[in-house]
Image 1 (tube, rainbow, N blue to C red):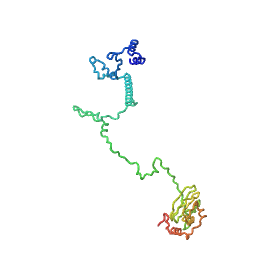
Image 2 (cartoon, one colour; image 1 turned 180 degrees about the vertical axis):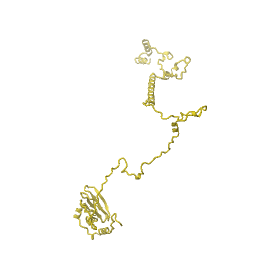
Image 3 (cartoon, helix red, strand yellow; image 1 turned 90 degrees about the vertical axis):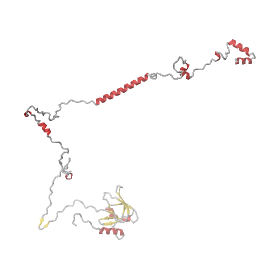
Image 4 (spheres, rainbow, N blue to C red; image 1 turned 45 degrees about the vertical axis):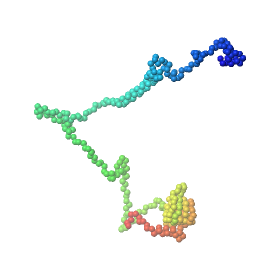
Length: 336
């Protein structure tokens, strides 16, 4: 209505007449505020009313309370698929249980196999089974005596608590492992050796038998002697260190006899001498000098060094004097 009236004023026409003509031609009618057509828009039902259908019912016709939720059936939440799953699970558990019970029953089952020969009873359980109580009405001649087997079992000697053992072997200290055992050592053959007899020629004995020499004499031992403290190192021909250390005054070292002579390196050359056959050779070098790669062989020592002069080195003279005055040990087997 407002749009039609405003448009009529804009065109310079009468608004009321124009609106009346518009209503007649278009069939439009203005609804009164109190009429049923005044409000054509209706609100839809809310979520609470849809969830609770009891609000739209007649409380006198419907026996249920409208504000209390409707009680569901106990079987309303059970689905058919769940029933099938439960049945399958029960069948599986039953099958496993039956299989375990069958295996356990088969394991615990005992079977007796028949034997070819029946067992023989060695003795009766009651040894006095053959004895009969005498009848008082009969005479003494009818008395039955026990059998000999029963008397044998009755007077059988009792078993000992501790068995009596008889030692078959001698004490361990007297046993020789070479004579007894699983693998005894073979006995050596007994050989009789003829003794060399000396022929008497008059009152005196003849000359002793001469034993021929079949090996050459051993070479003299080469010793390295220190008269004062000195560091030394002895290397083998392959470079292995066989001796290294500080030799104090009076100490000596025996040079090993090898195919290739070892070499010597001395820190204090003036304190090292060589003892060979009762004589001393040296010194290795001048005092305070270092000597390296000196071959330790008898030929090299005798060729390179001369016999030491005891007057020039007092320490060497004192060492030689002490060695000469030292008591010589008596040989083994001699009477003191």
